[in-house]
Image (cartoon, rainbow, N blue to C red; front, top):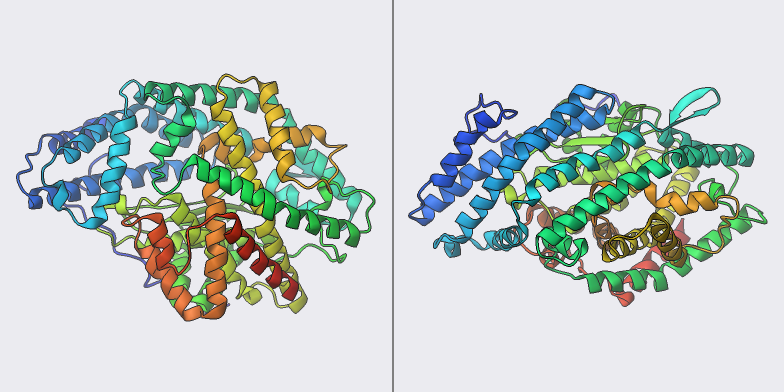
Length: 576
């Protein structure tokens, strides 16, 4: 790995400013206000005027979005940095509400302009999105949305402070979870309950927070004229290509086609481990008696191995990770005081995103890095699009990029594992994980539908609903008799429920698409990668089904299609 360079020709050229002064203090509304007022009052008398207005608006949006991005990144990298937290809170509380009022004015200005019909076809989805934004905008919701944004971040602060003691060391829950792969069953059980008990310490606090979030979301949706927050959110998320009924079909298809496969896998696990009872702390350990897989020791080593892996797939992909490494746009290691989870934050002005994750040396970290690397490639491929809104991707497309990269990269995991048996185990773990993830995704999404179709429910009612829904997607092979409280509260570990509601079913849809992309890659790697690049380069200028078609796959989550893809994964599992 000594040949890896830390400079990259993949670094895109930062967008130059022609409208917003370079020295503008974006933290200051007084400094920003003249630019917003100028756009609001500008006279548009031709198609050229409209294009210039849109270009200036795009430049302003990109700069402000990137500024907010860095505020968020700094806050999540260190939740104990009160200055960083206050800076983010101050901006979303004081500046963003003022911007929101102007955004509504801009939306109405564009929709009312007689030249909008002469814009290129790529703008049609954006115009439909603006119609949705106008439909849901209510001035009285501006302070509520600001309050909601701040409240949602409390989850990260609570979760970021969760630690446990193992072998005399203070560990984050992500770091402690690595012990669940140890062969020592007593140790696994001990650590499992330490993690669960630590989560349960904040169970009531998280329930209170969640109740506050539910009330705010319900009020926002009713102010906007919706019966419930789910229907409001489907409009806000521009779900033009599928409905809540389609989500229900996805839930049912997964329950019928995937849950039995996972149940059989778990029964086989129980048999291979020679256990009378399969407990929750027995689900991650290797069944052959071997220690957990270790693909790397540090975040730096993970970076270098990922660069090699991505180069093996495509020269451009390797250069993307090199670029992030060279510009210090990576924060990979788990540590106390760091927010949970992982993300790729697009930075629209510079074009080079930031990857954040909580690696602790586990095999899952390799998958997460490939996942976020897929997002980063997507960000870079869309940087050249002329309008910032073309780069704001529907998550069904964004997650196709990331989840496809998880599976494609698997074909080159020899960069992480020298030992052939370790490589085989890693692939098997990944493919089993793909199948096991689909029921959890369907479960969380179905739970969200219940949450927002039952406003005003009690904590007890919510717990009972969760138990019923989770039970329909989980295997009876697992015994929860000694961990009933943990099962009741396990939904609280899913940050999407707290921070980004209804952003989860997309993972399931994209997982199906990713399996199809991987299947194409195994048939014809060169063609599949070109189709993948072509699809991602479209950004949000075409519909989701068109993006999938460009990638050489279908946007389909019917029972028959799910069965077809599940059979393919099963056949690949049998090969390893």
